[in-house]
Image (cartoon, rainbow, N blue to C red; front, side, top):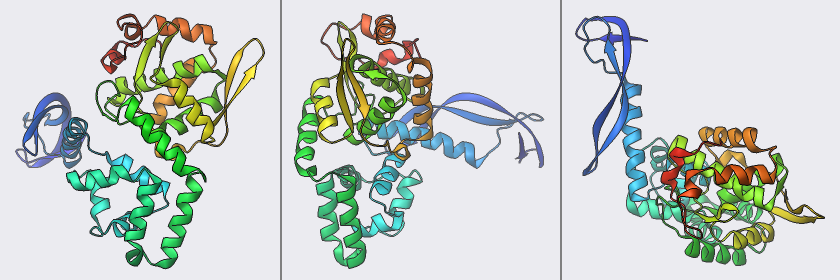
Length: 332
């Protein structure tokens, strides 16, 4: 690449060196792999804004993981879920006009703002904030947004939401190593489930394995799971914790149907279209990689593959599987 070297006073060819640097975030410091442009003439380091910003965002992401803060793409997902612009969401919440823009561009939210943004996945919370902000957004926008909430969530959303909250309480709300450093997100899981069921011939056992391979490959490649599910090691291989309850909710909420097929078992079919806009491009690449490799495999083959993985071998039956084993995954 070409860059301007202050020491040489000219634009020069720059070589990229990979290093580990200690970057401060608030009152903490994080070791981050960074790319550093170096002048090919005098060996001086060259400041390039994009490289500096990338290093800072890597450190911010580590801070977000450690402190369970919402990520920029998750704020974007919430906004798009309800059909809101950045300034529109700020008005609903009564925040400054550019607050959401700053957060989506990578700024760290305050703890108070973070907790509010986390709540907005719940339709009841969104409706409550709409009521409080009705005068700020105007009658027409208020009516449109309330209609949007009801379109996105089924009529029995209140009962389902209570069930999802109960499920989260049992599976765990922690963004820790057993959840791939993401809070369990039923809406993300539902869209992931629909897409997998649409793209692959899935019977229940295979479906569970595809979820596991997808989340663990995501953690291996991008250091974060896609759904936030935790998984347990059972004799037939890894499955989501509370998988029976999860399948029941996916059916009840109209995301998938499960149909018995004589001599084959229960097939998982999509009941609606998946919203892939909520997933980052890197997450979509992980999903496509898993489906390309395992989508056409038989249930028996996928079970065999899951049994070859260290994650299953080194976890006691019935215990949760740590995402630290993701680095050793070999089947995808």
